[in-house]
Image (tube, rainbow, N blue to C red; front, side):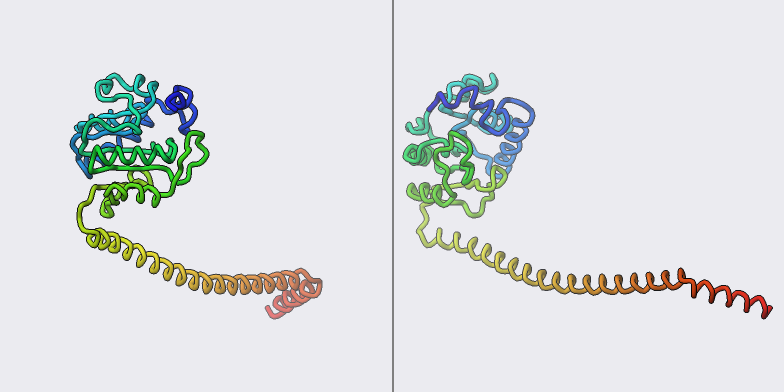
Length: 267
């Protein structure tokens, strides 16, 4: 599989060429800034770092960041400023060091299902805090062998005692990004947190549906009023056309001449 992630892959398989330019650096710079502001982790590993753009930007933010990737091409071509902080490795092999946080962005969908589950085990053994994202619907990319919905990944992490941090919004990475954390609390505490968020989301959904129904009813009234106005405008236009026809008739012209003559005689 490493040979799949070569120069040709990075040039053609990421929507746009995946290379060190202002667009990609800006994208990962924004993510690094949010990680620094919202989490401020200590020793951090970008697992599946590709060319190391996020590692580079996190280190600029003052985060002790490292990166690993299975691609020899990617690691070899990482910027010289981070060459000492990135290394080639497969996530199917145990991670040798412990990290305060591990980040994995759009990586595990590139692995076979069985390998991805081994990778999750290795990630969970190397950190208690994992920022994770894996596309739930991009089947077109040729190396996406393991596209799964978010609930699948949550189930896999839960097998190792990691649960979604429901109070952390990771959407600055992707809409489906999640922060999983090792939790040792009793299950009833976890259920309470999930239920709090579920209840709020359900209430919001019900309220929005009611609002949509109210707006639809109001829209129906406005459409009826609009149709009435169109009918009145058409009627007035019809009257105007009748008046124009009358004024254009020979009879009207004759009556106009007679009226004008009478006015002159009266004077």
